[in-house]
Amino acid sequence: MDVQLKRGILGGMVLSILKSGDTYGYELTEKITRQLDIAEMTLYPILRRFETQGCLTTYSIEYGGRLRKYYRITPEGRKKLAEIKAELIELRQIIDSIIGGDGIGGHSNE
Image 1 (cartoon, rainbow, N blue to C red):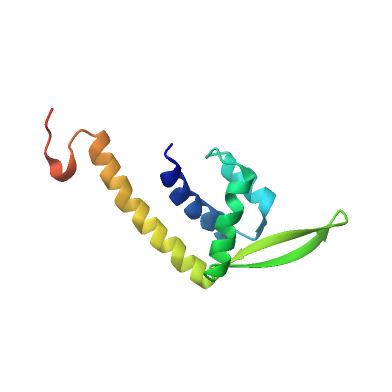
Image 2 (cartoon, one colour):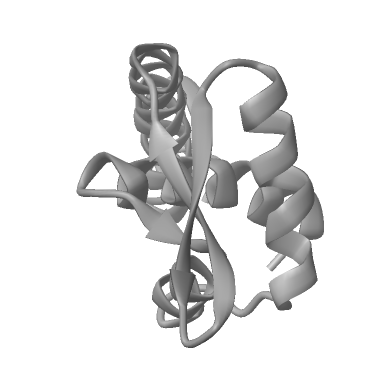
C-alpha cells in the first residue's frame, strides 16, 4: 500500500480505536497491526501530532514497575475523526468507481 495513503488511514484508525476507550501505545500498535502493517515507531509521530492539535490527552499509570502512557480522545479528536470519516467515504466512492470500471462520472472507456 502507498505510504501516503497508509498514513492517512492510520490517523483515522488511531482516533477510531481511542473512541472506544483509553489505550497505551503498544496496545494501540497491536490493534492497528492486525489490519495494517506498520512499525511501532510509525505511530508515535501521529500521536504527538494529534496531542499537539488537541485531539488527544495523555496520562500515565504505573504497571509492573514502569509507567505506561495512555492516550484519550478529546472532543476535538472526535471532530477530527468525523472529518476523517467523511474524507474516507468520499475516497471510497472514488475507489468504488475505479474498481467497478465505471470511471469517474460514470463514463467507461472499456
